[in-house]
Length: 113
Image (cartoon, rainbow, N blue to C red; front, side, top):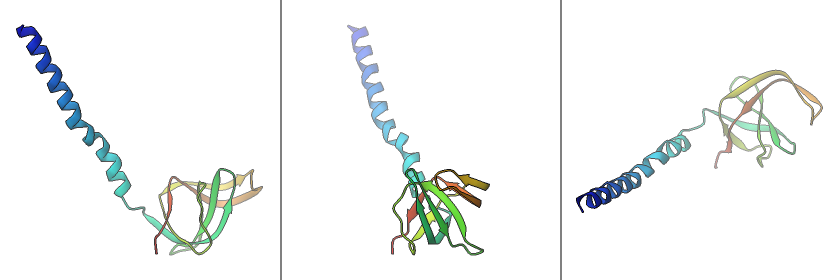
């Protein structure tokens, strides 16, 4: 009988520990969503393909081209975007165009007005 009670107490404490720990596992994702994107600019040009959106965005120095997963944006929108991988002389087969320099980013979001 003592063994059954001990096993039951162990099972209940394990379940209680999982229930308490579960919200903490989601905390890093919530914190990552709250981190502001480091770059911001006005969209000067938009080129959509089946999978990607290419954007020419103004910066303090000069316009840059960025590429991200397809997103609906328009010329004149202001966007924030993540840092990314810079590619020099990148040739897009779908556009049949070579970009002198383009930044492939994970995230682009419109800035609310």
